Length: 484
Ligand code: UDX
Ligand code: UDX
Ligand code: ADP
Image 1 (cartoon, rainbow, N blue to C red):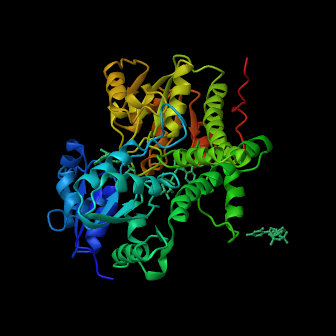
Image 2 (image 1 turned 90 degrees about the horizontal axis):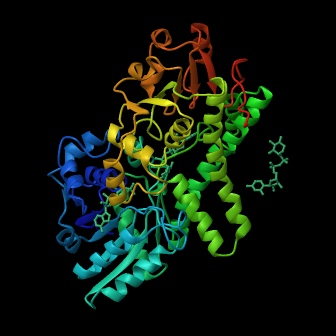
Image 3 (image 1 turned 60 degrees about the horizontal axis):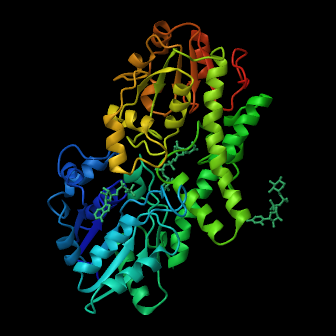
């Protein structure tokens, strides 16, 4: 199968940017262009300060940019010239109308498809890269067929992205598998083979898996739901561990040694976050509901319920331990991103934890090495699902005057004069802090609430801290929250 000459990707985000950079790096013979309607985003991709932080990304982009990797806002021209068009636009959860709060909002997808139909001639392969509900390819095909003229023919493929933020470059360099779904027709099979030949430039043949279109679409939602379910299972057990004196890390370790289960994604935490898990599970729940599969929908909904419970439980634990009140007490928040090695805050558990503490009158001093102050402030102001709506965002940001929140530029500053510290992201630098010094600058008794089980709790206790770890045997000082 001959390789395509030109590839374009619509959407220069967390998925599109790193994925195209990796294709460009491994396929010097292919010209790869990433297009976006956002001029500031494209300018950032063309600058030294890339719009997203991802370990190793800078090097890959710098090695290829200007050679066979380009970033542009000229969507129409680049789409018209491309052989393969990846679509990697945002698919937020709907905020209003049917399925609000659960179904995916496909506005950006539809507009991208209409744009493709308007400028395309000849034959093109269109690849669904952003996570979309099952059967989106069918809808896209309808839009393309009804809007395009008779000189345009195409195949739609589903090629879901399994990369995780923070490890995107290594995930892309050595993927567990690349999944390509296409129609079971001659033309569909040829299109799948063409895309497979691109990945096979660096991915072993046996790791490039082909399936039908709907299996590929569903696999993405299902894989994230199953991963999130493991974390929620461990989080549910963490509450039981605290009640019985078991240690969730010991339990998780022993479970993970069973090769039928495996050791990954068994870390209990303050809750999972990120742009995918919650969104994809809600999507799955919505699909099940729409098909009348109420019990199946309810089963998966519980994964989210458990995640919300874990965040609430953490806040309650903090408040009850600090003598049932955090009113006017300064609390240092270490970490705001949804996990380490990313500046992304979408659905980060820190939002709900911080809001919970603010509601009880706490004064927060927040530090995260990669999240900027205005993003932290806006996340704490916005209602759920509003982040993706620029006007609501702008209005809220303009109106923020919250003296209860301070954003510091170091962990030490956030800790100074605080009654307690909460670790909400597992950044490596929090492990390396001088906790003797941290103890000195805090109000006594000094509390540490480790939402990621990142630190050496016994060492901290020797210094004098009162420590709470998720699913760990409790200090006598740490108490249950009693609702009054
Ligand atoms: C189980 C545990 O595997 C073992 O570690 C423990 O010590 C005792 O309980 P067992 O009940 O003998 O062992 O059988 P197992 O092979 O785990 O299967 C349990 C059930 O799950 C069977 O009905 C099996 O058919 C079913 N199963 C297993 C599936 O339906 N699908 C699978 O993928 C695997
Ligand atoms: C996820 C999937 O892993 C990836 O395959 C998919 O393509 C996109 O969604 P991502 O959201 O980037 O990737 O991060 P991931 O590493 O999966 O972590 C998600 C959340 O779960 C984070 O908040 C993380 O801190 C939390 N987590 C992860 C735990 O709480 N415990 C664990 O054991 C693992
Ligand atoms: P993901 O995490 O899935 O990569 P992001 O929100 O980071 O999602 O990126 C999606 C990008 O898609 C945004 O930069 C947005 O501006 C861009 N986008 C949305 N619709 C279009 C469109 N019709 N044409 C070009 N770019 C688009």
